[in-house]
Length: 356
Image (cartoon, rainbow, N blue to C red; front, side):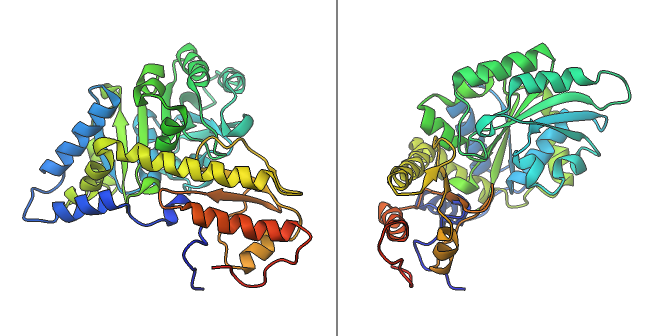
């Protein structure tokens, strides 16, 4: 089916490449460059990461988030260890067993928590539940920032996370596929919600913030990154023409572009949530703190929106939709969706054809 522009709220990875990333890629295409990350573009991208996080750290580039998370977790664990994560975490629900595969069998132990944030008391109970040699030893806590439910860990939440990982001598992994959205939401320095609060390794997302491909694995504890380059090579993540994986990062990270795009996506989500919350029978089911809106529609609305060409996912249950905004989402697109929902939930007859 041909999807018309303005119908896409399925994910922020449905948007195209932002101009800054595209222009950097075009510029990197000039001439020749050393392969396998020995080029100036890769070195500059890594330096920009260090400048933004205000710390000396090890930086690696991967093709996608599943590889970044899986290899990062594998570097923190042995096969007899376990990783604690939220039951909705991407590493549990959407990576096809990648973390277990690349770590040769590390077990994922799941906890709950409101709004996709781990409940630190549950984390403590999981660690204490079994301490005998017959059970995989908890080694890592993995959190997602912003979460799969569109919420963010604020400074106080991360302090509680930091306390529990220190108490039980765990490493802390952060899935930052939408880390930029969290930074923009909290209006804070990236260091304040990473290494200053105990994060050992961050998988920083670029694909969902305007890049065509590429994630960044950042080790704040450099001891943990020893031989990580070999993991990347073995897993097919060492790009021969690495400059084309790194150059978009240079475009995105220069002059705060990454945060401006994220802030725009967040603003579009807030605009959408505000409009939906004023409609009869429509309710927002999770706090809107980043660029995702989880909404419970009246019966039949989801089906009719899909028929009209609107594209989005349903994750939690019947009638509950996840609407994602991106760097490219426009106010006009948000308003057209609001108009269609308003007509469906009011006394007026719903539209039978797309209003685009």
